[in-house]
Amino acid sequence: MSTGPLRIGAHQSIAGGLSKSVGRAVSIGANCLQIFSSAPQRWDTVTHSREEINAFQSESAKNGVHPVFIHAKYLVNLATDNAFLLEKSITAVIADLKLAQQIGAFGVIVHFGSHPLLWAGLKRKTYGQIVRQILKETPGDAKFLFENSAGGGTTIGTTLTELGTIAHDLPEERVGFCLDTCHAFAMGYELRTPEAVDAFSKEVAHTITWDRVVAVHANDSMGELGNKKDRHENIGKGKIGEEGFNAILHEEHFRRKPFLLETPGVERSGPDKENIDTLRRLAK
Image (cartoon, rainbow, N blue to C red; front, side, top):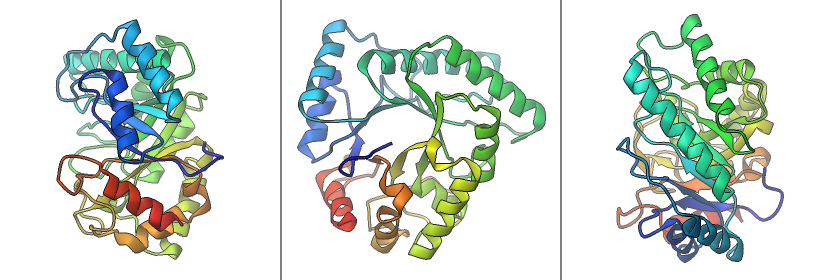
């Protein structure tokens, strides 16, 4: 989606108000942004005032911070058979999409969720119906963006083939994808050489297509290739390493997408300037 300068940003806190996240992003050298709309490990939502929304739009425009993404709550599971959990999940994603529309965010990044039968035919059909219901209740341009999973337990959406089934089932213009480098590596996709990244890129083109990839979660991996554990590490300090991210940043399709850091940070307090600077250095 990016045709101008490389967009490198990070997940930032909205503590103190939505617009505060923009200042935090700018302070670490970010030019795009991801936020939670409210506490990610609680079901309750926060109502943001018109003043907050206006301030956020003003600050992001003034500082050239774009695109902006909202990440759905960690609790969301749209694949569950539990009626209570499903209702809560749907409500939470609808709230995020409505806020995304209000603040001008590009979309909401959502984890697939988990189900003991994994990707059975009936569950797959029901899943598509749920997503369409959510889109119907949130008119506008804000996109519903699936994120690939690391593969642990009974999570779905772990392989490009699975993502491809969703791309096929939901051709709607508002449905897209966010690729997480740590999750892909943990699932067994080699990303440490230019040749490996090129092979991964070709598989993306064959399954979900690059046109439907709108963002990249740039995270190194604490774990080894194929360990199926979602453990983020700072850029260049994990098992993907600087050589891997150099290859990713110089692959033509990846390079056109905004990169969003979800790294632990040097001080283990979240994405920081050091990680932003490392990505920019490797991108040169």
